[in-house]
Image (cartoon, rainbow, N blue to C red; front, top):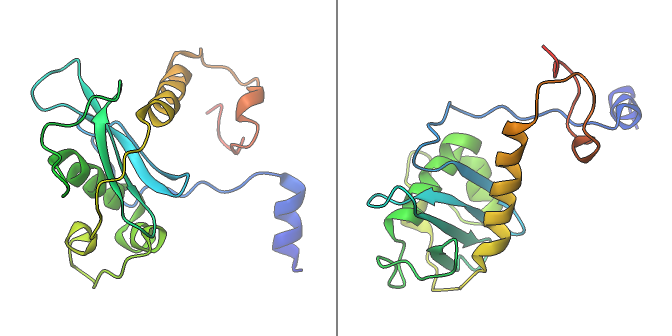
Length: 163
């Protein structure tokens, strides 16, 4: 154990990994690598009040896309629809191609498109779990600014939080 590792354990916080490039949140407001999936919320291109919950499962590359109330995506016929493609593109912007490919366990040559190497079949994932995580993240936008810690966010780093 080295001094850096000991200091990290004593602080009980982790460093945030900044996005690889800034993202525009209008099309894909929420993207995460969690629960063994690349998952997120994608805005509808035709209806401003509709969103889709899309995901790609790590390892099996099972694809899922439905509205937040589990209605199937009209463009999802076993291969990636435009929502899954948008999710993958934004994940690469947020986390970088290497990290997303490693998480999904897919080999992607440098400079190539992630989705060109994802060979998955339909695998329905309940949208409610991902959508509720998205809503929980949105709720934090309504919390008034304060230097006081929020108990449910104790694992976020406090460094520079009140600036």
